Image (cartoon, rainbow, N blue to C red; front, side, top):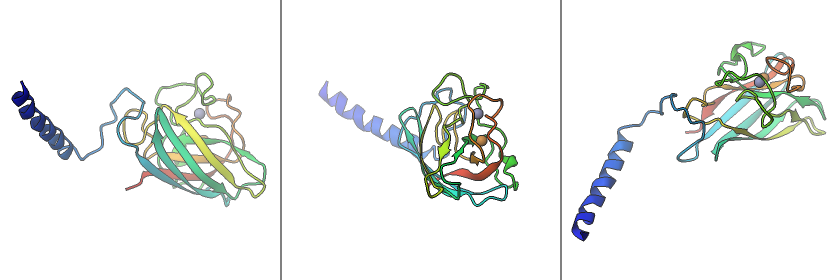
Length: 189
Ligand code: CU
Ligand code: ZN
């Protein structure tokens, strides 16, 4: 019994290693499960000004159990102001008004709403609020999305800050006004 076990273990280890070595490409976007699995993945989004503003910032993203945490600072806002904040479908900030980023990331075809409160887009997040210096300190958790895996992958999509607050109910995007900053979510090597 013991000799058989000693033979089987190296075989299993070898099989596991070769499976990893032969699969260097990201997993295909076909998984139905939105919950991150495996090692923590990190990404960054450098948001540049759009629509003639001076709003910009750098956000760091990391997978956590059940979703993705987004942290960082967005500056150049009016002190005390509130701003819609979402993941948009396309990672294209090239238009002056960032319209090339498309609508809210919505893989489940849900109506727009508030994160954590009934139905909403996967890309919906709570409004940012600027401090007395016009800086919004972002600490958002987006449940049900992932980085680099699955059908709810936000890697390569855009993070957008809006001129006005999201009312969490108007369709299709909360009546949050112009897009004042935009950045593509990129994997940290
Ligand atoms: Cu938006
Ligand atoms: Zn939305």
